[in-house]
Image (cartoon, rainbow, N blue to C red; front, side, top):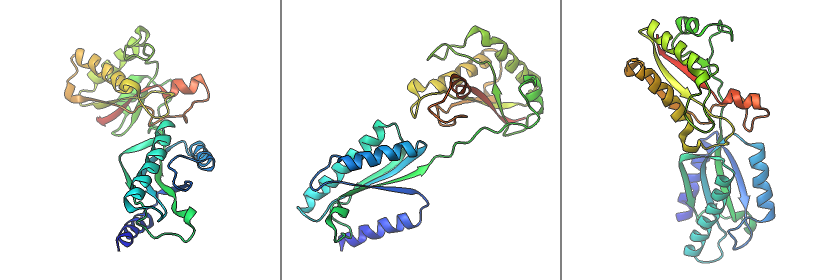
Length: 264
């Protein structure tokens, strides 16, 4: 039977996965969120700020034609997905949506069949690795000299004009220290990593990438071999402090540039 095939697919996926799930129920013949479902989703967002949605499945009861129920289940999926995106919850780039209509094992309680299933993962926030013998007063040149592969060095006092990749003049000293470290350590290969603050999910205009690239361009302009350099922007995916930040200091610490040692 058709529904049995889909049931096997769903159960095999869910039983083999450690991912979390949320079920939202709909009123009869409706694809809009009722008050209970809206409250449930609002609470879910508040309680799970750091998640990534992987799958959204829609279901209907058996009343109506197959064609109509297939369409209604997809409309319910769209309603939930629109809500998720409006709250800037991260959605996996390979996310899956599917409307099963009435083709699944129906509950005898019809209200339990009118639903959407959300499958999601919790995002682990990883703080960057730091070398134990480095403190804030350790000169940058010494940090690079002692750093091992995989070490992340934070460039303090690298600042940019608001919402631009233009480096402020007061940051030139730090850039020069970085340049000297690369000149003094010719085997050193690095990845320049840009981070921004405050935004829940999106990196407007890829600002973190452009800021990392600005430092890359500076070093290339100073005759550092581009084969020793790479750059990457992480947006707000690796904050030191949860977003939204609680203070301007936390915002400043999330808005940073770091250097990952690739070879030394």
